[in-house]
Length: 404
Ligand code: GLV
Ligand code: MN
Ligand code: MN
Ligand code: MN
Picture 1 (cartoon, rainbow, N blue to C red):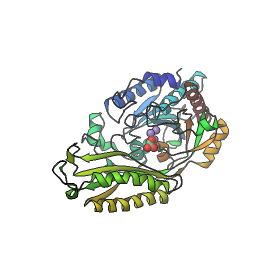
Picture 2: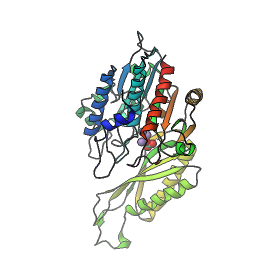
Picture 3: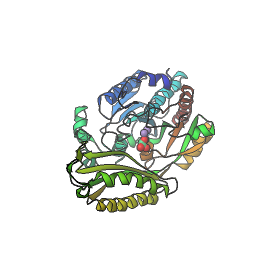
Picture 4: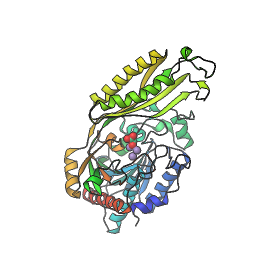
């Protein structure tokens, strides 16, 4: 029987990013592949039957006696193993490790589920490699079309289809996954909290209430590449100028909306040389707010500002939406059931999760485990072993109830 912390210790060395700090585990790369193999082995040790789907997700089934097939009311829990660049140890893997630990607890007490239980690992939740978060769950749920994503490229120019082939997967098999999803009647994701809500409430475990609307947009500023020394200031069309001013505008605009966030975490000048005026600059905006209207309102406002800033420098601008997820309010009755069963507080989240994708499809809930630093997507993300145990215990409590 393993605790979540013991399971995380098993994979602690995989994908450590010695340059940036933290972990860089991107879908279908070597560290993420190693984590998948680890999960398959852990599932097999527990007698679970691992069935990879066509979308890069892994399903490990603990089937109830004599029940299988569509409509059998299965329950699923899980999370992801990929990370952002230089991310923390817990975002994703804690949900997977806790699912394994919960199975251990149930097995140790001789529990046999009357309904099938699946542990799921979703692919590319962070969008860290191909830019589209929750890629595996969106493909499975049919909310994104394979044609739209198979040609997405990573930083080295490799397409998703090529990366899948290199990982031994057939990209022709991507798309809606009814063989798994039609079986499942409820989904629960456990996750490290990405904030200090549970610290303030002095509680180890909480239940998610809502998720902000959020998306990613790429602003491409195009100017004229030129010589940094030979080009007088008045002769420049430098796309870096409007791009950098837009970073400050993002903060200013978001501050005008209630509890909204706008972030530029990635900016890419082309060709990127110290003595070169860039020819173009790609800038990625991550914008989030309570409502679709506020989120889109911020982006519209920033699009207009980008146009003015670009024109002032003789540059042009092109905006493309790379991903979008509307506000999620997790299933009310299920939330009530979880808060009562676990005597746990509710709290909202500003992060995106596969649970948000599945929530459109079936009653879905999330459990959060206290994070004393409140930091996430950075090496300082943390959860105490005792709180991780409390999370796995809470997960086992719910799974026992739901599968009996
Ligand atoms: C993923 O964790 C996100 O919310 O960006
Ligand atoms: Mn994350
Ligand atoms: Mn996550
Ligand atoms: Mn996430």
